[in-house]
Amino acid sequence: MSASHNALFNQYEHEVRRLNRLVEVSLALNSTLELRPLLTIIMDHAAEITGAESASVMLYDRKTDQLRFVAATTQSPVTKELLNIPVPLENSIAGTILREDRAIVVDDVSTDPRHYRKADDQSGFDTRSLLGVPMRSKDHIIGVLEAVNKIQGGWTEDDQRSLLVLASQAAIAIQNAQMMEQLQRAFNELDQLDKLKNDFIAIASHELRTPLSVILGYATFLKEEAQGEVGAHASAVLNSALRMRNLIEDMTNLRYLKLGEAELKREHLPLAALFQAAQNDVQALAQAKGHNLQVETPDVSVVVVVDRVKFGMALTNLLNNAIKFTPSGGQIRLTYNLKPGSVWIIVQDTGVGIPQDQLEKIFEEFHQVEDHMTRRHGGMGLGLSIARALVEAHSGRIWAESQGPNHGSTFFINLPLPR
Image: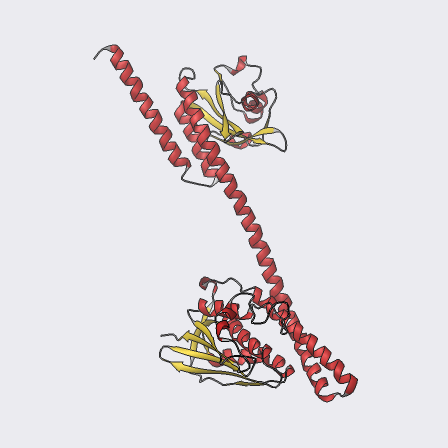
């Protein structure tokens, strides 16, 4: 093989290795959306591909109209010092690259007046030669990628082409990583706001329940004992207190609008304890509306594995729903039936009933059988949808039965028993 053929073959082999290396770099850049590891990949590969001692990334800061070092080669001992040094757009090689949107090759920076020597002075790094290219993403430049101090010989056309390709890949990867960081920050802020909201709702609803129970008790007593104008005032107080109770229940329900099974803190509990807690929670409300609330006491051997607070909320919501939609003096029953492998919890009322075509829709969020502009019973229509979410999170099933308007309703929860 002639010398010219050997040279051509070596050139071809070198080009193939260079392209393969860029493909490997591209795969590496696409392997992460975290900015710090991404910058490390860019630095190490930029220095390796161009045969340089070091490499750095400077991103454009629109607020200060300057370039800022965001990363330098991991082997460099001056990385931390560089990251604190801003680079002006005027009177600097990097600024010229950014402003003129072109690559710049400098084999001896000591002869170039544009070299920003303050960076070397402050960091202690000795820049002798430099190859810099713009980092362009779509139609704008986001920064500058530099390879510093060629180890052997001078910068080549291959070095420049390779760095330009790497800069284009890096610009897209950096912007994607920055967008991901922004999304993560926004998500964390929303998560924090959501936690504050839930904490506020929990504290407010808890603190309001006790004084409201006292108000309901006294208003009920006054309504029964007082006559004439005083009785009318007592009725107005009682009705306002009932509306307040509905509002508190809606506030509490908002905490459980979206619930996953992983959020449950399960424990073995007697069903009787859950029934007793639910009865205590709604007793004052039932008395205020003149209902007869009957709660069957389950056998102590009936034990379920549930989250005490969240499953208790499901029971309370069903009882609140029955109380709300049952006219004064009605009957409310909480009972149960044991089935093979499960227990059926039953809430039965003598209330307004449910049309057949509404038996599934009543479990939808914000749905009530009444028109939202004329509804008489108040509330946002979240109670039953929350109850369904809580029951299903416990691997249970909930449904309703009714013979139609003015024939009452019966709600069932089918809850698996522990093996």
